[in-house]
Image (tube, rainbow, N blue to C red; front, side, top):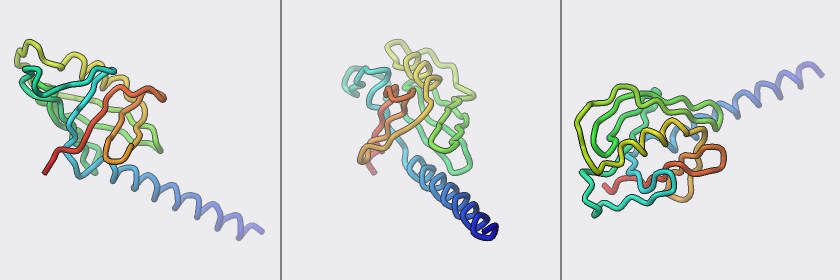
Length: 136
């Protein structure tokens, strides 16, 4: 009986580890272009300097662009919970940039969901940032 319980516990730990690795692999390996922030669609033809981007690395690093400035930070993935810290940010002035909305949205992320190739960063069940992989 104890042997069976130990085997079930080991299986549960291994399954949880595999699913965390699978979740991580969904985030990494792409440069993600932000398509909407806080419910507002971003359109590259709106005269913005650039759209925000996010890159996730396998070792928990986060980097990209706010649409104006570059950032280098970190993220934590625990189960399906996700938190982002943009960390260090360059300080150029860019009027008409989505930067403030981007930084506000990043602080609200608690989870994520894949929808086909789209990545939705969520606060609970509410999308705060929607992204698509950059075309290669």
